[in-house]
Image (cartoon, rainbow, N blue to C red; front, side, top):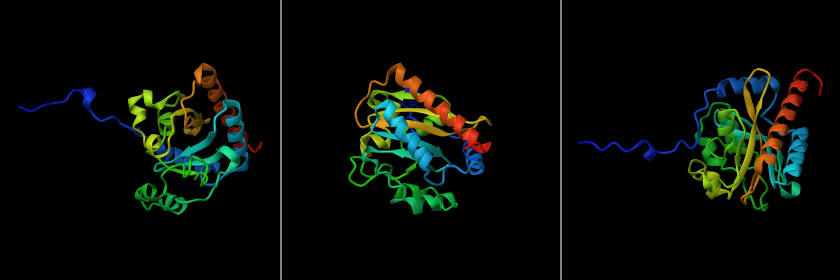
Length: 216
């Protein structure tokens, strides 16, 4: 007689299946996004951090293997842009496999501010991959309150305790990535925070559309 554990005992899927990733990569290439830091997106992340009061804010574009913070705000403005893991992430982009991401791109290097912050993160780190798959905002006032999210590597490796993000869904219906903020302390984001992150995502989506149309 075999024992079949109840469904609740099954391992939690920490990183969701992302069937839209190939189409997203193609769309990002058309838009010229997700491969290099952009001062306008850094400025947007700065404003996002200001309006939410968060120490870290990102404009995050996601492909099949990794995440890239094209816009980034960190305390003191020390976003490095190029750091440990860039070569490995580039290798993944050119088809050399996901193993390089796990070797060299472990997320925020020096989240306390001592070594700056890398713009690359493996796809199994953090909560933005959940946002692009679910296609709606996600607010986690304390990630440790949610078993599915408490086990994410960013909790132990980086010290992330709270997250808020919303998807960037463009005119073609593809979720290009997210705008998001994180903190190393629990945060009572509340409904006001939810509305703010959704509003900022809508604003940036409009700016991306205007850029494609040649307006910016």
